[in-house]
Length: 198
Image (cartoon, rainbow, N blue to C red):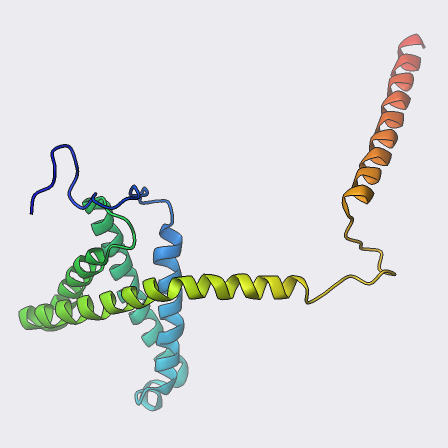
C-alpha cells in the first residue's frame, strides 16, 4: 500500500498528529501511577508476601509494574511520534508492546524470553488500549455527570460569610471596590503633594 506523494505514512487520519509533549503526562504518567497501585495490590495478595513481607512485596510488585508501564507508554509515544499518527492509532500500541517486551524479555529470559515477552506485551497492551479507547466516551460522560452532581452537592447557607455572588451583586462589589480604590489614590496623591510642599 503506497501513500500519495507529499503525505506521510500513517497521516491518512482526518485529524493532524499532536506534538509529543501535548498530553504525555496523561498518556504516560497516569498509566504508570495506576500500574503502581495495581502492582501494590497484587503484591499484597501474592504468595511471596509471607517470605518478603507485605510491604516489600507490595513495593516490589508496584515498582516492577510501573517500570513496565513506563517503558510501554514511552515506546508507544515514541512510535506515535515517529509514525506521525494520532494517539488513538492501535498500531502504536503494537509497536510499543513489541519493543518493550523485547527489551524487558531479553533482560529476563534471553532470546526466547524476548520473543515471548514481546508478543505477550504487544497483545496485552493493544487490548488494554483498545478497551480504553472504547470506554473513553463513557468515562468522560461519567466524569461530567459526577462533576455536575458534585456542584449541586453543597450549597453555601445564607448566613455564611462566604457567599457566591450573582452577576448583579458582583457588579456592585466591583463598583464599591473601585470607589474605595479611587479614594485611596486621591489620599495618596494629596499626601505626596503635602510632602512636596513641606
